[in-house]
Amino acid sequence: MYHLIKNVKNIIDKICPISQKSFNEIENLLEVVSFKKGNTFILKGKHNTTEYFIINGICKSYLINPKGEEITLSIFIENSVLSPQSIRTSNTISNLNFKALTDIDLVMMDAKKFENLMINNLEIRQFGHRVLQNELISKVEKEIGLASLTAKERLQAFRNTYKHLENRIPHTDIASYLGITNISLSRLRKELSE
Image (tube, rainbow, N blue to C red):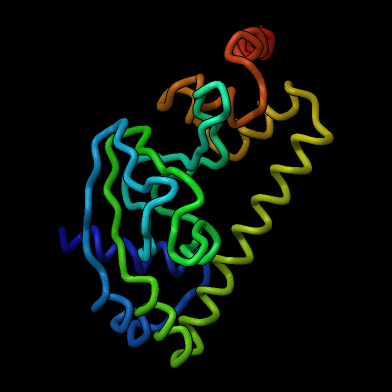
């Protein structure tokens, strides 16, 4: 499990490099947790005070629509950071569900303790701000894509961002993420392979 925690430094440095001294402060807060494919590990309406790094696997954030269908909002791949706790909760109550689309290994830490590190350490604060900035950019880009791109263009953009993901996660989740039906996705995949 120790090697999983060591991967967190690589994830952080990819986003906003920090010194080993600063990482040592974060490392003291880290704990490893794993979930099986299909497990919803954050539930909408439930208390959540945790930050997460995704070491292995793929997960999604989603909501349930009035028809009882899962609507995929975001997809998170290995070696990345889950949406910050401050964005995905209101008063520590989760606004979203998060589900493992494959078996998944996460490294987690208490959000309040991480916030305290951000207050006292400039490098950690810069990393935290970059994560927030990247999350907002990602959401705006998705909104722009849904509003201005054709379904085919959205699928091509998805393929550029998430290479080889079509072979690893359910197509229903991809279709939902793209704002199209599963039948439309099948048709578009066929068109693009010709």
